[in-house]
Image 1 (cartoon, rainbow, N blue to C red):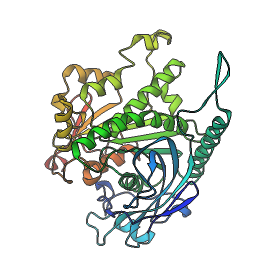
Image 2 (cartoon, rainbow, N blue to C red):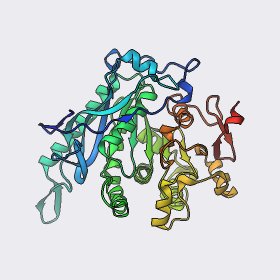
Image 3 (cartoon, one colour):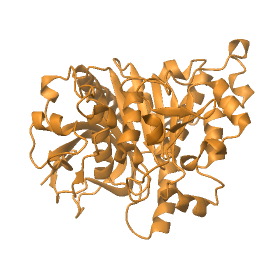
Image 4 (tube, one colour):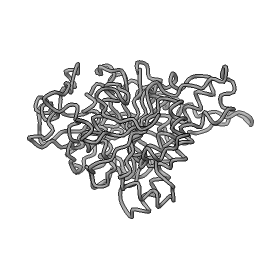
Length: 436
């Protein structure tokens, strides 16, 4: 039975339903795959995955499902530690062996363990104090609480960095129909197969996961908008933590819209200060997985700074700012059935997560090719999950490509990334026959 520690209170709940650990990515599969774990600190050589979580979900102390945070919105951010256990009981050596098998010889499941809240930012909006008729200021008590909580947050990141071979933070943002537990599971299995050599974290927002599907999706859409401001603050605090060298950002489904909106606001902040966003926020890779976002809206968020000359008018020689040091990678599948619902609800011509290379016009191919660092990667093939929406974890070929990108920093076309170029900015996975 998991234990939840929320701002001093100890709560217990029913164990969340376990989920099977994702299949082993192709590159690790024995006998020729690289080592899964290298230079990992002794204190981290244990089956449990300790994640840093950040959330604007309200605490759900009466949850019958054992979730520490539910679907209601909190007016502010909290952070803490979430343990994801691997069950039935398994030792470190056995886990390493099972994690490299294409066909495992024993069951390995994920289960939510202890969740401890380590800090809570003041409720928003912060109190305003009127000094006189013309002067307003923030309440000094709340401002002090903010500074103390931010300091605690950054110190926890630094504590985790000290145990991590790579001085980088991987942050995962989930999509629709996800709970605190399911988002923790995905972050944990990604962390596991990225080699556990980063600070692993997830940002979880109050996506709806119960009730009427259509009503639930509408609620989620507005909660996603509500989450943008909190994710923006989270990214800013992580990026300014001393010792953080890189941010690796991954988002799935509707979470991609949250991430793109937050990044757009941060980039405008940096550009207005005359600073390259890539330097200000240390962002390396941004990965959009099965993006549930309209093509035109996504394009506007990604290229808006280019199409607004007034934004960079003060920059020398009409120079364009660098947005990231790595790549923007978009994984899409025309067979993604979950996104069909979004197309109907929003009457969207197309969702980014269903794009094929031929859907990208020659003009846009040339544009993104010239911009550089933007890759649309299309997957077609056997569906490995019910709706074909989570292939980045359920398909070993796709997850292998993702590991090559995040862990090893490989570009499309590099050895190990089995992709076929279809245009200046588009790629697709090779068919099995072409891979031989």
